[in-house]
Amino acid sequence: MEGAKGSSSGRPRAVARLRLTKTGHARFMSHLDLIRTVERAIRRAGLPVALTEGFHPHPRMSFSPALPVGVESECEIVDVDLRASPGADDVARSLEGVLPPGIDLVSCVMLPPGGPAPDSVVRAASYEVDFRLDDIGGGPEAIEGAIRGLVQADTVLVSRVTPKGVRELNLRPLVYDLRLEPGDGVACVYMLVAAGRGGHARPHDVARAIAMRAGLPPEARPARIARKELYVERDGRLYPLS
Image 1 (cartoon, one colour):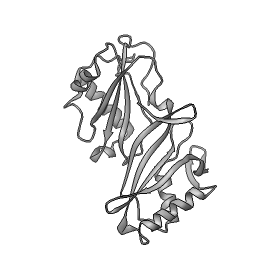
Image 2 (tube, helix red, strand yellow):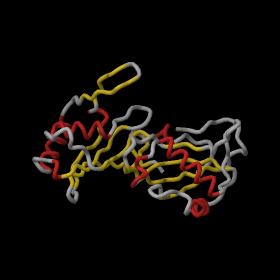
Image 3 (tube, one colour):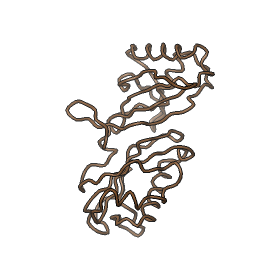
């Protein structure tokens, strides 16, 4: 979601790109709740933020693509337009102690103003999805076999509810990488999937497709889903958004 553009209270001179976590109880925040939380933190930090126009001005911020409620994240990206050009360390120090538990600042870099919003350039995202071994009758091998079958398939159909009704989507072209990784008491699935405005694969849909192929019961839901990284595309290759 991108803040309103146009005239603002002070011409932006710099952009602070914040990388935040969203873990613990914070993973149950909606995207709108996250926006409000970051806005309050920025105000409490006293940063020289540029404001939107109107009767109720807000800090000018741009966010990375929204997460489903309940999904953790290590890479919530927020661009904050500033009326001054403080150092990244100064911005980070200002935010110390004003962010709630689970919303932690991982890094801050300063960018020139006028760049594209994060959600307009993201093309892929990586996730970790954990299945409890107790829920898997065939053990990790069942998950590994399901992954192999999904990767080799040409079509993996999922149903999505849209304003125009229910439609089927072929998930397979949106899944770029899928593999089983070592885990402690869990089968940890790493996935790299399409994300952003050009098309996206929901991690829950991929997890559900794996669970069905592994023969897991319907109640065997992933114990944890976490977004690990966001990627942009340059010259046909994916690079982490930074």
